[in-house]
Amino acid sequence: MVDTAAEASDYSSPLPNPDSHHLFGIDFHVVRMADAVEWVMARLQAADRQCQLVFTPNVDHVVKLRDDLAFRQAYERADLVIADGWPIVSASRMLHKTLPARVPGSELVPTVIASGTTDFRPRVFLLGGAAGVGERATQRLLAAHPHLEIVGTDSPPMGFEKSEQESDRIVEKVNQAEPDLLVVGFGAPKQELWLAAHRDRLRAKVAIAAGATIDFMAGEQTRAPGWIQAMRLEWLHRIATNPRRLIGRYAKDAIVFPQLVLKEMWTKK
Image: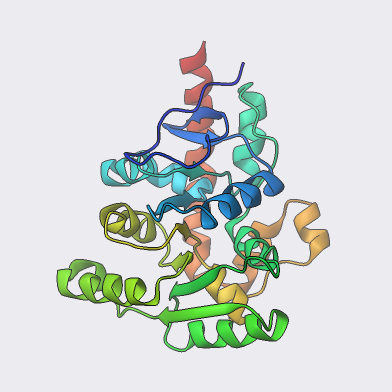
């Protein structure tokens, strides 16, 4: 039986949230890509400007959540939580709390952008990535969608999250631009912690914690070919293209995640 979605934050949503399943200590919403896009587009066009948070947890998030209380508390403030990882979807089926599909943040953002019509095109702000990455992503997006409004980009310096003054600067810059959609690419858990801490002040309608999505849109990183994704081996492609950063993380996840699945099974019994 599908669990009823709990209120994920202090904000009232303009439309009801999808049902959810409680897995690994957080609530995953039961959605496919089309459902997630419809959810985001509805809130982008709502009159209420209260910022809605979209988090896209993968296996590494689940592993980090095990020991990081602040990270778990940030997830409690999320309005839409979608599974970005086939291992999570597969585990959900084993645990009889089925999530219907993987919904990668790196696909959700460009799909939302491409869903704009002549009646409504979201104003977009790209926050994150190395210096110049946001600008290159903007150029590529505008080449594909000439009528898209990219109202701002920003690349905060390393350690910015420890500076209240720097966070104030970012919030002010975002608010002055008045985006509908705020795409945040700081990496986890930094992006989720920062959004949960500052959402009350942000005047974007929807903020998506999108990991490396800005890098993908800029061409700094490449997605795996479709046939690799179909075989559910995108993780192998990412290791091959960025081994120094990812091989240690993926090795830890491969050891810890099965233990968490077994724990969920035992708890259920």
